[in-house]
Image (cartoon, rainbow, N blue to C red):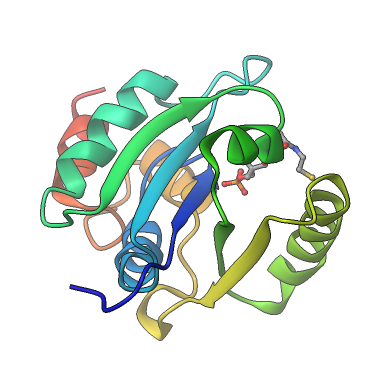
Length: 161
Ligand code: PNS
């Protein structure tokens, strides 16, 4: 139990699929904020591996041990959704240097649109530094073993697709 209020954070992303790297950032974010909403971007112009609803159901199966997490699907501008939810922060994970350029540009744009919403970056744990959802999809597409990259519910669902 935290001793004082630390507010609501959104953890936005595509999560296609949700990986151990995402879970690590989420678990650590949950220790910093009262509540974290995993916000799945519904990008209707991009057909994903899983539909946004499938991603939400899978993430829910992976976060049963966390009591301050919920999972939602959003459309439109992230900062508008954050303002509607009265979120104080956007949580993002950083892996290697190549993430910085995109993340910096996104956080500057988001801050200009909504200066009251901070972007908080957590550095990935070493074990997950090289995981990305696109690499997981690629390995899976070639029949490779993805069991060390994704939690069990995601693994069985990918294998049965
Ligand atoms: O997991 P991803 O694909 O790196 O997540 C990117 C995401 C979903 C956080 C970003 O594309 C986003 O916020 N999309 C919603 C539209 C928006 O607000 N764009 C402006 C950000 S500069």
